[in-house]
Structure formats: C-alpha cells, structure tokens
Image (cartoon, rainbow, N blue to C red; front, side):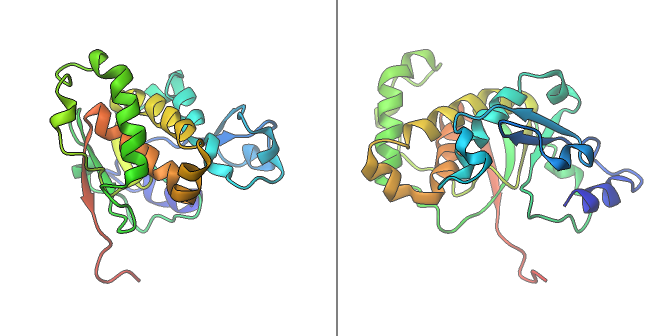
Length: 213
C-alpha cells in the first residue's frame, strides 16, 4: 500500500502530500524503519502478540495522533488500511469543505441498528446540552451513515472532533456483553458512524465501481 502511495504521490499535481502510519502498539516494529510511523501505546498491550479484537485501539491512536503537529501537515486526512492499494491519485474533489467528508458505502452497516441506537441515546442523554442546537435530539430520526472510518477523507479539524468520539464509542460498545457480541467485528465501524453523526460531519458515501478489477 505504501509503495503504491509513493508511486502516485510522485505524479504531477497529485493531492497526496504526506504519509503517516499510525501504529497502536506497545513497542516499535520492523516497519518503522521503512514507513513514516508514529506509535501510540495501546490500552490492550496483549494485542502486540494476539488478541480477539486488534482494532480496538485504532480510534484511540487516531485521536492521539490528531493532537500532534504531524496531523497539521495537510488540510485533509485520507484514512486507509494496510491491505489497500492505490490505483491512481485521488481526485481533488475529495478535498471537501469543513463539515463535509467522503466515505465508502458498506452495505452491511444497518442505519437503525438497535444496539448503536441504545449507545447513541445514552450518550445524547448525557451530552446533548453540550452540542449546539441538539436539545431536541429525541425528535430526530436515528440513522447511521452506511460507511466506516476507511477509506474516508475529511478535513483535519473535523477529524479532531470526530476521533475522540469515535474512541469513546468503541469503548462504549465493549459492554455489555450482548452489545459487544451483536456488533462483533463491525463495532469499530459503527462507532465511527455514531461519532460523525453526533459531530455533524456529513459524509458523501460512494459505492464500489461497477468494474472493480
């Protein structure tokens, strides 16, 4: 993935300007000598070796990274995962204004998931008074965006608002046990969707191209 990033970032007029691998791990690994990396200590140290949910600390690491000077290099952040490859330099159209973002549609995200609705309502009951114009949130229709944290592109200032919420919702979906089991491996994605819903960062969601290969 990093190799294809470098290939297309070197093209004239490419919007790809900087690359940072965010590593949530208790110790450095061999790739820090090959790829620009910032490491953040995880809550789950056991994931350095094996754990049942290795992405649990991803959102926490992104939230920590968003506070660093490294996150201020560019106006926007494109979040991608390690098993992606670039096939061309992205269009400048994804550099959206504040409050807007670009995401990818995941058909297996259910907008009215009852487990996330419960988590959302618990959060809003505690914090709605802190959110401008959200006093009447109970009258709003609950509907999560059908996307996830990657691939996505959003303004870095928006990410600074979203990332702590994302990390909080990951933690909130760990308990009780029935919520954790119901959301399974998707709870990191659901947590991101709840975070952008509350932060008011509207994602324009695109599906896969018809000719994928």
